[in-house]
Structure formats: C-alpha cells, structure tokens
Image (cartoon, rainbow, N blue to C red; front, side, top):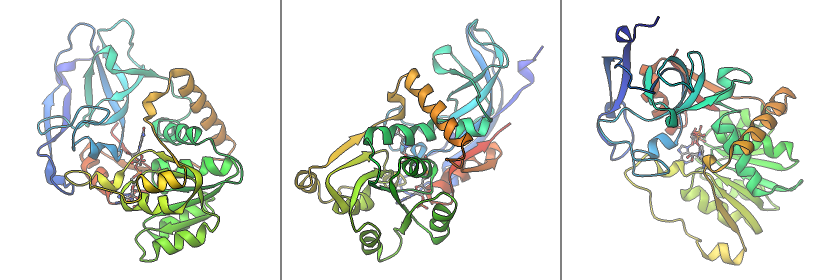
Amino acid sequence: MLNISTLKNQQIYLKSSPMDKLLEEHFEIKISNVENLNNDQILVEIIYISIDAANRAWMQGRTYRSQVLPGDVMGGYALGKVIFSNNKNFNVGDYVEGDLGWQNYAIKNENELIKTTIKSSENLHMSVLGITGRTAYFGLELANLKEGETVLISAAAGAVGNVAGQIAKIKGCKVIGITSSEDKAKWLIDELGFDGVVNYKNNNFVKDLRSLCPEKVDVYFDNVGGPIFESALFAMNNYGRIICCGAVSQYDQAAPQNGPRGVPGLIVTKRLTLKGFIVMDFNQKEEEEAENTLLGWVNEKKIKPAEDIMIGLENTPKALIGLLNGDNKGKRLVKIK
Ligand SMILES: NC(=O)c1ccc[n+]([C@@H]2O[C@H](COP(=O)([O-])OP(=O)(O)OC[C@H]3O[C@@H](n4cnc5c(N)ncnc54)[C@H](OP(=O)(O)O)[C@@H]3O)[C@@H](O)[C@H]2O)c1
C-alpha cells in the first residue's frame, strides 16, 4: 500500500511575471510532501509534460484558460498515471491527461482529468496523436484543402507546423514552410518532404517567399502572427483561406504588438477567409477520428513523428525558454518519470 506522506513533490512555480523575454529567473523550484487527498480526489504521477508555445501566452493574461500568476505552480498539459484514488471512476494504473502542472505529482478532482488509452507509445500519444497532431489535423480540416493547392505554414519545424506540413503533403498539396535556420529548412525538405522552405530571418524573406510561390498561396496555416502574418497576407491568392492557429511571435513580451498592416483591406480585396480555432473545440468522436487517422498515417509511414525530448522536471523552464527561441525541432516534451 502506497504511503503518500513519504512522497516528495518537486514543483516549479512562476516567481514573477516576465515583462519582456522569459528567463529562468522567473521560475523557482520548491520541494514539499504530497498532501493527503480529500474524498473523491485522485493522485497522479506525471510522466511527460508537454512544452507548448501557449505556456508563455498564459502568463500574458487570460486566454482560453486563466492567467498563470506569480505564486502559481506553472501550468502545463501532461500525461500521468493514477497512483492512488479516492474516486470510484479512477483506478490505480489508469492513464490520465490534463493541465497537471510542472510537478512530479498532482492531486486532482475527477472533472480536471481525462482518462486516456495509449494506442502506441507514451511519447507518440503526446506528440502526433495528442493535442499537437490534432491541432494540425483539425486546422487543415477547416481549410478544406484541395489537391494541387499551395499551402504555406509558419513555425513549420515546430510541433504543430511539421505535422500540418506532412498532412498537407498527404492531401496532394504543394507545401512551403517558414522557419528560422538553414538546418531546419534542410530537415523539413530532406526528411519530412516539404517542397520548399523560406527563412524569415533572411533579409530576402519576402522575395524568397514570392519566388517559391509564383502561383501564390491558397492556404496559410498561421502559427506565428505578427510581421510573418502580414507578409503572408500579401502572398495570398484571391479566395485564399488563412487558418489562425496561434501567434507565437507575440507571446514572449509583455503584450502583443499592434498590427499587422493589410487588415482589413487585403481581406476584402482578395476575398480571404480567416478562421481561428482551439483544439478543444472538437468533440470526443472527432478526436477519436483524428487520432485513428493520424495513427494510420504514422503506421503507413506517411507521417514521420518528430519529437524533441528533454529529461527531468528541473529542465522544464529551459525547455520552454528554448522553444520560444526556436531551439526545438518537432514536439518538445519533458520526461519526468
Ligand atoms: N489553436 C490551438 O488550439 C493550438 C493548439 C496548440 C498550439 N497552438 C499554436 O501553435 C503554434 C505552435 O505552437 P507549438 O506549441 O507547436 O510550438 P512549436 O511550433 O513547437 O515551437 C514554437 C516555434 O515558433 C517559432 N518562433 C518562435 N518565435 C518566433 C517568431 N518571433 N517568429 C516566427 N516564429 C517564431 C520557433 O521556430 P523557428 O525556429 O521557426 O523560429 C519555435 O520552434 C503556437 O502559436 C501555439 O499557440 C494552437
């Protein structure tokens, strides 16, 4: 029988709200004993923490979740296993996921956990088959892709972006990625089958984009917002669709900038459609359909999983800061257990 009071919980707290770029000094680590559970509560041991660009946006203010404030255990989506339960619907050994936070152990109520089944490996469950892959999948479903169309994807070498690019290739599209380095560009083309990649850090970015898409862009999958969104607006075809997935270029600062230019003028003259979405908008049936389709594509080797795994809870601040600076290729996870 597990003796809860002997368990030590390492927790990473947000110490102060960043006013500009996120630094390790904005976090602090504390160690405490795991508390006793109330009736109906569940004790989860965390296995993988998902490092998401959105973690930084949560510090800026209310998003689709409440703001993370100084003194809070840092929020984070995670996969874990139930190790003790006072709840009749959860048993020891059940896999669960949810916003479990940056810590070794989480005490949760039933409504804060999703019971889950691992259909492959734990890491694939948290990458292509998880929120990341489903975000790419649902975003492109909303774009209603047609074979032969040109699809442009920003943060293409990141978690969502690389899967979106691989799915667009499966659908028979020409896929152009946007990223920050020649190394990532080569990886996207040689390993993941992208047709071309533009480096937004090059002075010739707009010219390079134009020369890679002479026929212009039918669908832009926007992960970054800001100046890149603006450049993409000018590169769109009439009746193009822009899928607004996120705005990572605007997260690592006190507040998002104004802009971009071309709104609403170019939206009107080019008859563009902009569609924002949140991955949680979809129901269980749609999620299962997405997961099964993605698993099928992985098994058929049409999608190559790209994971970037760091080890140890103490490395979670570094993992997020690095992701915001573009040092990840594919899905960044921190393995805790
Ligand atoms: N709508 C939803 O439900 C949903 C769900 C999940 C994620 N998202 C969004 O999807 C996007 C990607 O998130 P992710 O968690 O998968 O992260 P990620 O793409 O794995 O990592 C973020 C990437 O953004 C790029 N980046 C950072 N600063 C940038 C800047 N100033 N300009 C352009 N690119 C920059 C970096 O790559 P480079 O080396 O290319 O710069 C970095 O690797 C985010 O906007 C996130 O909010 C949305």
